[in-house]
Amino acid sequence: MKQQFLNEDFFNRPVLEVAEDLIGAKLIKDGRELTITELEAYDGPGDLACHASKGCTKRTRVMYGAAGVFYVYLCYGMYWMLNIVTGPAGYPAAILIRGAGDFNGPGKLTKALGIDGTYNNRPADPKTGLYFMPPETRPHKKLIQTTPRIGVSYAGPVWANKPYRYLLTDDQSPNNLPH
Image (cartoon, rainbow, N blue to C red; front, side, top):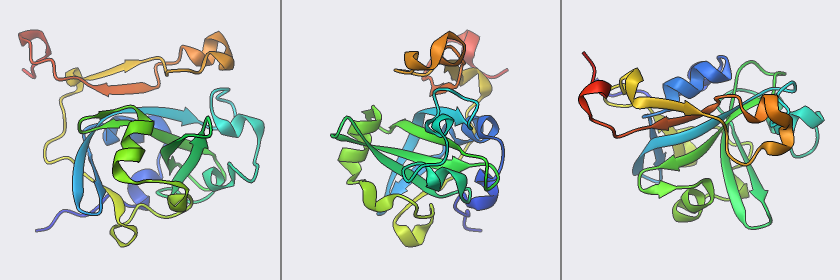
């Protein structure tokens, strides 16, 4: 039986649940398959690090829409940032894909895969050529590390220190292996 891609139902859940389940999943771009190794969650208008904390704007409108749709924006006028919208329509939450495969950094990832603003507001679906597949085997929770997000000090100490960054470690030491 062929595995199904991760669709709107998968993403239509609270952002922190989706983030934990998305780490280790596969990002597929035009047939190229990369394991997601790093991501960050942004949890709605109350999260001062989230773009939606400033309200619904032309830029953030996509975050208020359906789950499973890409939110892609240009950062510093140079780097495209790939995000996936989560949760119910009307609640603006998203996950930034920070690393996959050998690409550590969201700008490096989008550049290597040719992802730009044309993907904004498009569904994560094989028809668009950019989508997600579940991992062949879920990574053990001991191999998923959480830390504060990167570059969000502007959000103040509470939101800048939330452990909303998820990393898939490759630490195979005896203390980190499943029992």
